[in-house]
Amino acid sequence: MSSSSITFVAQSGQPLSGDIRVPGDKSMSHRSIMLGSLAEGVTEVSGFLEGEDALATLNAFRSMGVNIVGPKAGRVTIHGVGLHGLQAPQDSIYLGNSGTSIRLIAGLMAGQQFDVTMTGDASLSKRPMNRVAIPLREMGAIVETEEGGRPPLTVRGGSQLKGISYTMPMASAQVKSCVLLAGLYAEGQTRVTEPAPTRDHTERMLRGFGYDVQVNGSTVTLQGGGKLTATSIDVPSDISSAAFYMVAASIMPGSDLMLRHVGINPTRIGIINILRLMGADIELSNEREVGGEPVADIRIRGAQLKGIVIPEDQVPLAIDEFPVLFIAAACAEGQTILTGAEELRVKESDRIQVMADGLQALGVDAQPTEDGIVINPGPIGGGEIWSHGDHRIAMSFAVASLRASGAIHIHGAEHVATSFPGFVELANSVGFNLRVIEGA
Ligand code: S3P
Image (cartoon, rainbow, N blue to C red; front, side, top):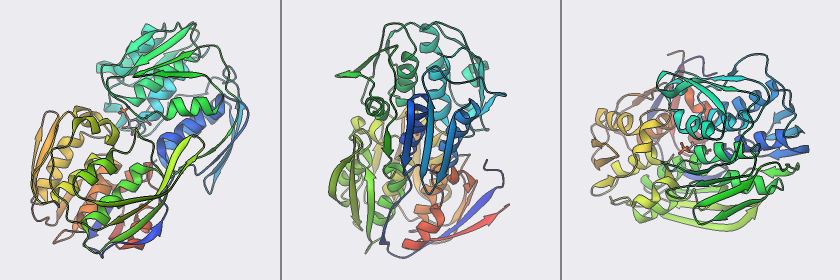
């Protein structure tokens, strides 16, 4: 995966225009494979994201004996084996760049009768796993990590799990989902309380598969020992992928861009809320519900953005969108301040440091703080950017190039394929000016 290196040469483009659909939601694509595999019956998925991360999850379940047909044009057919039907994989499971895969699958593996070791690429191998190992051990699982709680992560089989009441120390949907998925195999009730609302796709999709999940304020509860019943899932476009185009159209005067069928789950719409606070022109239409998830068409027109103090309650709702929001801030009028976002330091890269370094390399005044950043907008120049194994860094600087006075060379852009296959073609079709150099 992501074997040959790619550099984007990104240059100032046109005002954006077009009517496009970005690929399927990554979070939902992962979960559709996991729950479909463990359901009884055949699950049909459409709109599946054929990016490397979601494919890593798909291959993991194939390696545990699940017959999965596709993906073909976003369609996947999963022949579920039931909660107790997985088989030991022949080898360790390689999950590439994907934190969602390793953390959610860890929860499911805690309930199996066999041992599994999960590995990843250089970026994933640096990411913290104690946040899932600690609650899983409390449930009775045997979980081993490398020093410092890093992958490879081994989960031993044969433990009888017991339900726990877990209060998460950080707002993380991956941790919440890991514990809830282990809870499917636990005796009694599993309860997770979150410090702030995080994406709730696991809860919604479990219900879609007929599993009873109770939500009371910030606490989610489920009872072990039930079953999942196959269903069909229509995955909407990923608002986190749409975000690059939302910022791009906002910062390019004269833009008018339509994004179709985008997921607007209330736990994901921080990008819309924050951009609107900055003065963006965003219009939602055709709002509807598809398979338990709200969806809309989103029209964005160019607007003069202004710098803001980003409300901390929006941070978990926009957690993946900050790299591109920093580009919006660099193009705004007045200072933008972000606080309460220390989780950004443990994503695919340290997104506070890597974005600050990149913005500074292009001449923008961006000062990292422990839990955020302070950005004073100014002209964006050309320069060299390293994306540090992080797809969202590469795409964010591609957006920055729209307003840059010179070419931006973005190294390590091969990781864009983890979440957004076809990014360059789609971007160029609406007004970007991106060139790809392979093997750079
Ligand atoms: C995800 C949760 C978030 C997000 C990631 C996907 C998920 O991670 O950053 O891209 O699908 O549950 P955290 O739970 O670590 O915040």
